[in-house]
Amino acid sequence: MGIVLSFSMNKFCFNCIVQWTKVVAGKHRTAPSSVKCPLCKRDNYSIIDEFDGSSFRQHYVNQDFGDSFILSRAHKYRLQCYYTEPGIVEDIFNISQYWKSHKYFQPNQWLKSWLRREIQALVQEEDVDIIVHHIYGVINTSLTRSEQKSHTKIPETKREEFKTSVSEAAKSFLTARTDRFTYEVELFLASGLNVEAYDAVYMQRLGWSSPGVTCGTSDSLLSDRPTVVPYLYIFDEDSDGNE
Image 1 (tube, rainbow, N blue to C red):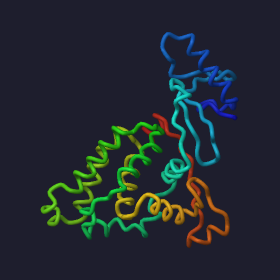
Image 2: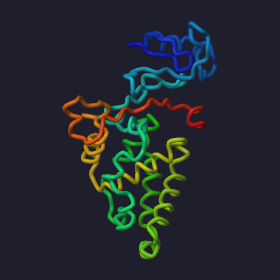
Image 3: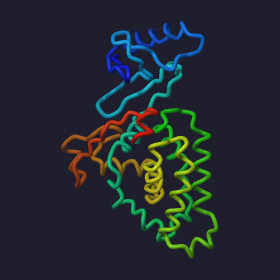
Image 4: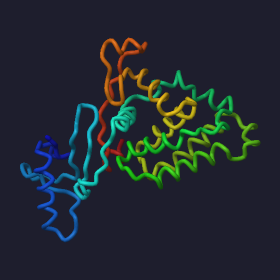
């Protein structure tokens, strides 16, 4: 399988470049954070493979490739949603009405499962229990805090307090994707749907026939809007900090 080094963008066989990084690592007392491209000698901090035009898998040089987390099609679908412009499904899942009607007092039994998949997709790690527990706790606390007093607050105030709480809880883990993540949390809560139903509605509006796959002409007729083509964004420390 062909892969590319993230900085030099030279293409290699995956097994060959992994072996090359092991040889390089063997010459250091501690695991190096980068590896020089065998061709152009430029430093690269990650390796990209499984690139299909709109999604990819990224391995960092100091990572154990054998234990890397492989994104499922459902993970890729959610990751690609972050590569689209926000607001695509807001006319279906009315966030403003969610706050005005105080629907946030109704517990959402699917929120934790949705959060787990969302965070796994964004950080591309399987073990996200600590992050999920933290953000889930903040969301529940924010939605249920001082319920009687909440009825006296205008919806806009309650919403802004919620967004601030979630953003502060998530920003250490999601960095530049925090604002979009907070918006997506609101969308899921406003939908009132389980994960499967939510995915179905979201994908139909995007014009995708299944997670991460754009639909053909016949399938796209199910939607009143043209198929949305996600833009590609590579998550790394530099781009997260400058987005």
